[in-house]
Image (cartoon, rainbow, N blue to C red; front, top):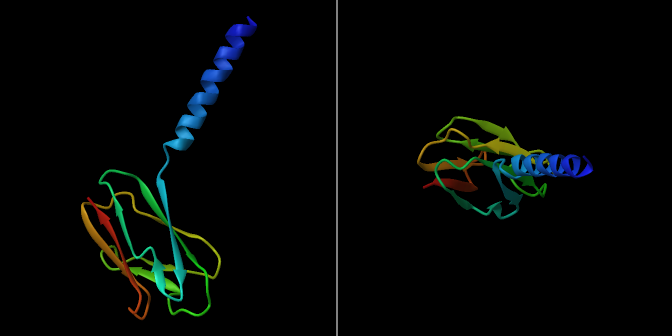
Amino acid sequence: MRRLFALTLLALLVAVVGCAASGPKEIQVAVTEKGFEPKNVTIKQGQAAVLVMTRKTERTCATEAIFAETGRKYDLPLDQPVRVDLSGVSHGTIHYACGMDMFKGTVTIE
């Protein structure tokens, strides 16, 4: 009986860990004095992905990110990660920039 309980518990643990590991891929983007780093990101089509953008400095005009193709705008408060969900985005390149259009970045889905 103990062996059955232990095997059931192990199977449940593997299922829970497997579900957690299959979540969206998180791509870290730092916002620095140089702009968005990395500037260009590539993901595979059909892959769930989330950009996690964190502004690291006050010395930048990139206090927001505006995504041209989706029309979405994200405020980028200092030292606070902002999650940008890319699910449902089709094949191609998504362009984003700061509000002044000085710093730019892309996400390419291939």
